[in-house]
Length: 293
Image (cartoon, rainbow, N blue to C red):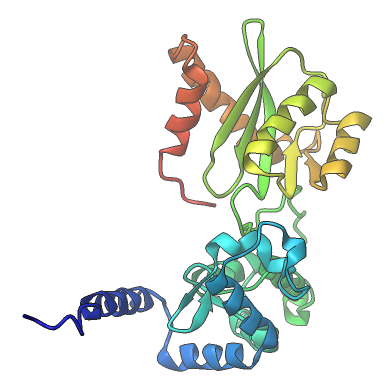
């Protein structure tokens, strides 16, 4: 009768092969990998982070040590590969290495967007997009050569999670009115809710339902018309804790993605004149692959 002593061996070998295959997809040298792993091994926060990933995260971030609270919103995307904390295939960089990594990202004095592009392939820590922007703004050489171009009214930096930045606008079909909300960068996913009016009270009521399903975004963009310019909507933003960015009359294109989502919705609504139109609109849009800008 064959021994079952090594019965678990095929599973272990399969896991090792999967881990090696995943590691092979990471664009890095062995030297870089070892350097980051050694820095993580020395970092006390990283040790707690590994424990939380392996043990599982509590639903309430208040149950976490203070060092881990900034990581709670990213918990679903953090993992461990070959003993190294990753997000999801980017190296988590502990604070001791962040300055040297910024120097490498900014080699050649590339603009902030190109630096973010470099980081998006390899490295991550909470708030890295903001750090890159500040580093670029404070670079003396870049200041000397920077063109005096107006800054965009809506930030184009890549958010670090889905539903971080959403745009919203209204659509009308006959006498029916709809609030359209679109995930600005990650998926271009569209949420649509029919409203009885465009008043702040009705719109806020529908947004509470939408945010209840997907969470409260960090940034909400809209035009500067009613009800978005009302005290009630400003108060709603303060209570929820999101930043409300409005487009200027001189630059209405800054809410362009929300307006594009409205056109998409109107087109589908025109084709689908049945009660299932909203579901078909949302699921049809989200099923199409989307590349973030």
